[in-house]
Length: 319
Image (cartoon, rainbow, N blue to C red; front, side, top):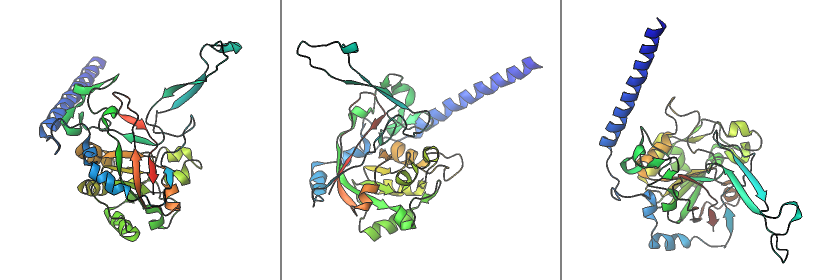
């Protein structure tokens, strides 16, 4: 009897494997190249042009700057199993030894960890569905354990654009929205109108939900395991607006628990996979809304680590 059970189990695994392969094949066959061509690897960053940059630069009125990245350390909560560790070392200077005749000393950093911690950019190779990624790229064709061979973070050009932050917490009259609570299309339209910050093509759109300011220190476990976020319809609406990037002061932009049970990270699929729109997570939006800086000049240069799919970032808002 145990032998028969084992055979049935093995057959079931083989069937699941075949179904998975078929799903991948069908997904790839149904996929159509994006509007920027079958070889495109930068997605919505194509919308950043000299003309758009010059126009966005006109938003600088006071010369004020703000960090949009948060400070991180080994205790920063993150999407599991991500973690980081930092060590400061003095090569060749152990036990008081002098490495140079003139007494020159130096400290070096050793970083061990995941790029997807704290404020981060999700690149186009980060998210797929049934092993198919942005612009019909099949995972087995470009993903290796030592880095991706297409759509790596090093391909992302400087993202310089008009930025807006939509204060959803204020709209709902709360310090922070609840885990699983949705940002709807109607909410987005209402806040954009109230703030006089219409969403335009080529924008970077950030949402201030209050989640990081209100929950990261007070309840890091909840902060890193649940979150409010944009509905799938909102993701599609933003894609229709042809924005460059979408971000929030949450670790994943999407709601957790998800809008529809089992349909996790639906916004990632819509924005990254289907439209090549970058995601900006754990953004420090509180500094902007406290200064009523709802519109600003957004500047981001991504660390050019070849083959990486995410990056720790600190975008700058200038206004």
